[in-house]
Amino acid sequence: MSYFVQYTINGLTAGAFYALVALGYTIVYGIIRLINFAHGDLTMIGSFIGWTVLVSFGLQRLPMAFAIAIAVVVAMLVSSVINVGILRFAYRPLLKKSILAILITALGMSLLLQNSALLIFGATVQAYPPLVGSAGLLVGGVRASYGQMVFFGISVLLMLLLYLFVRYTTIGTAMRALAVDHDAARLMGIDVDRVITIAFVLGAILAAAAGVMIGLYYTQINFFLGFLLGLRAFTAAVLGGIGNIPGAMVGGLLIGLLESYCAGYLSGRWQDVFVFGVLIAALVIKPTGLLGERVAERM
Image 1: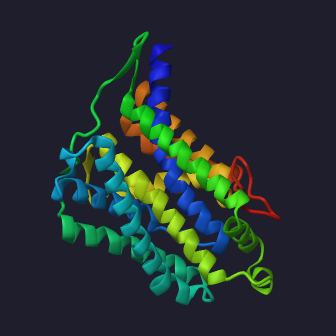
Image 2: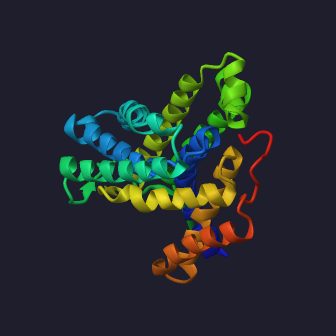
Image 3: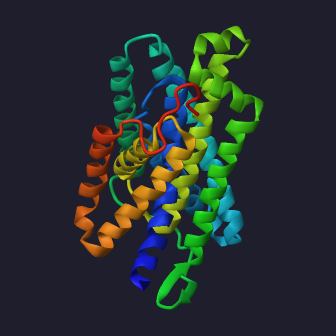
């Protein structure tokens, strides 16, 4: 039982990161029906921005919470600018075109971000400053580090704030209106382009926060980080019901748990087999996901 609890703690921590990234996929898909394949690489960019801020400016000498907060805020700002730029110059001209054209463009943007990071930061693995130690609680052979508890708590808080924002604010109402019908929303006076831009900014904020926390938690990052992370997060979004915000949260946690149990009871080499096997099974058995995509209200 102690092993099971330990695997569960590890899985929930990783799953919280996947859920944050999956929310970026599901927000954009819910509004403009686009699978933004560059979103995982945007998380990688956020991770590198946070690393650059901490290392280049020597912030690790400041109080830990203050240093991390600065790194996260800067990563969020830079990631938001990049994501809005991608929307404006790559996606928006194609929104009225074929779905295939915009999907190919999304894949191209993913490769562009990967290779840009490769040229700027290099191919070597970069190490985050050890700001988050290994100290934690040990109860009955089960260990939960303070870092795990803090990162999980921050992730859940961000997910809750996003849900409340979409559900109870004016902009959130506009986002839900766009998820139903763009033309009707425009007739009601909603600035469609502005709302879509806000959705991309929200996705970038969550991606950057996940990227910095991943760097602090795993301590190592590289330019290829966003590829598999993006695939796992996309799997989580599909599993929970892409276009459904609570579904993305649930899907991310489930993927994290599945990975942890697989690595613990079988082998880490089987993790990707199980994760992408789940994606195939979800598409075949229940394409709408566990929570199902809402017809009248997708978000």
